[in-house]
Length: 108
Ligand code: SF4
Image (tube, rainbow, N blue to C red):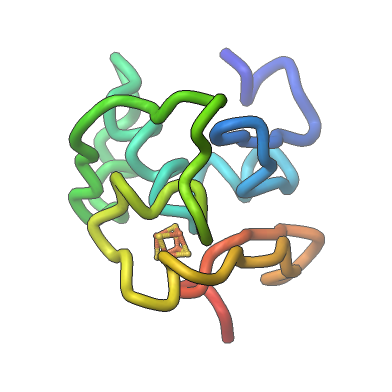
């Protein structure tokens, strides 16, 4: 639905933008683990899209906004988290064509 009514999509986690870009780029080529996990649970998503995604199932609940995790805010639930993620917050960086992602595993 969002893809069809929007030119651009921004994905936020705990109040911080983690991915932004043209709707088709974010929908068909999601980069951030949180975006990928969100798309995997969309009912009726086209199978060809799912095939391009790893299984980024996330556990647990969103932490309290009153006690935001250090480093990357998503590190307590991210299957790819490293020590760096616990201590350092990734900046939103352009991947390509205005598609920006805040994740160390997406850095080129
Ligand atoms: S920076 Fe680390 S914890 Fe955050 S989304 Fe990327 S891999 Fe996961």
